[in-house]
Amino acid sequence: MGPPATNSCGDLPATFESYEQALRMVRSADFMIAEHQDTDGSSWVRGAEFYSCDGESGYFILTTEQGSYIHRGVPLAVWNGSRARHPSVRTTTNS
Image 1: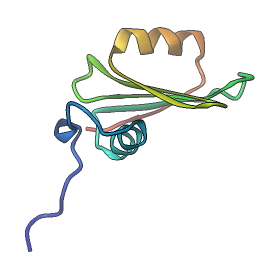
Image 2 (image 1 turned 135 degrees about the vertical axis):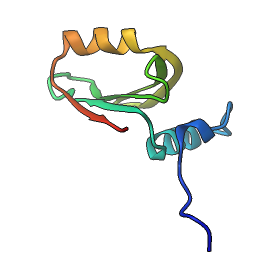
Image 3 (image 1 turned 45 degrees about the horizontal axis):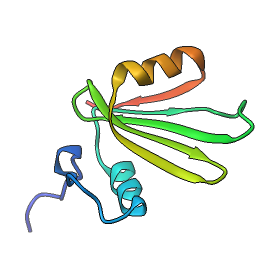
Image 4 (image 1 turned 90 degrees about the horizontal axis):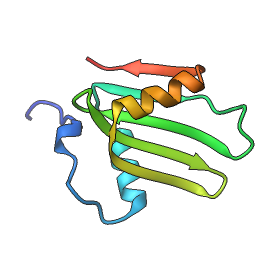
């Protein structure tokens, strides 16, 4: 038996078969930066997440009452700007 399988963000495909697959694979991968924003004060946003492999850009997931929307290639500076306006961010940083 070999070493345990890793779920590195570097192994994510360039394209996904569906939004559901993209959400599932991104949320389960290991990232250098994985942050979740508390959106309890919003009447329609249910969550915001940012995942980055390289600390420069990454995946942004916005969850509303209508569903989750995923964007790739979002600069970290854009995410940080959002956090500055909404400081209640729970942060998990993986090394």
